[in-house]
Image (cartoon, rainbow, N blue to C red; front, side, top):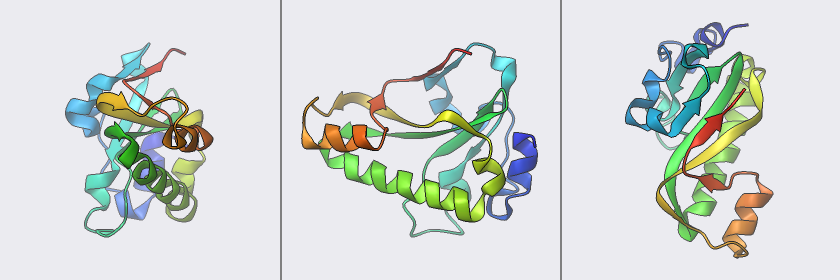
Length: 147
């Protein structure tokens, strides 16, 4: 199933599909792919789900590249934000299973990415760093997909 079909078959976001990385707006500059034409579309999950799930701790974006779905959270990387991003990740995982199984089926091998705004202020070896590492969601400056 294509990413666009998976999105349109997901009732809560069916009208939110955008071409390429357009849904990421200015944040699209933190995504670096080898073949830009292989970007199959994107969704601003946070904005799209705001009306349906206003009280949820929503994840920011999803997009597809070469048939695989990636999920990006653009968020400050301070020790005080680690728990928030982990909560957003847990929300996303549950939402994918319960409300977006077609998109969930397209997940890349390493699907979840925290892109930090500004600099990362989480010290290696700190409790917060270990928590982020345990959840496989260490912040980085950009997402590079090289296949």
